[in-house]
Length: 70
Image 1: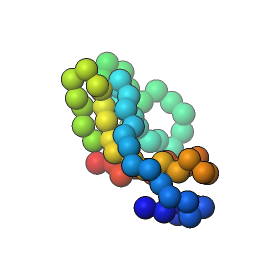
Image 2: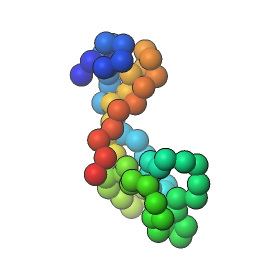
Image 3: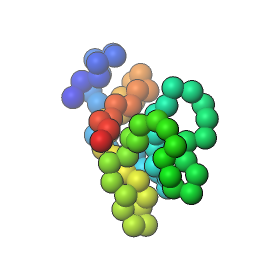
Image 4: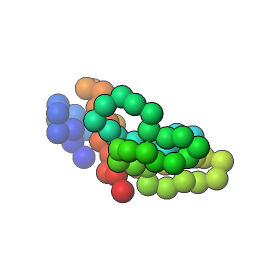
């Protein structure tokens, strides 16, 4: 896949975190004790010993990351 920002070739990979990743409109507490308060969860899967994982594409030329969320 080519980057929609700069046209360079993107590399497929994974974004991982010990906690769920979320998008929200402002900076505020999103999670407490694993509960989602607000925002949109971005991670697809939770795997034991690996945490939350979602597939993504990275452009190392312009430093952009593209993911699909659930």
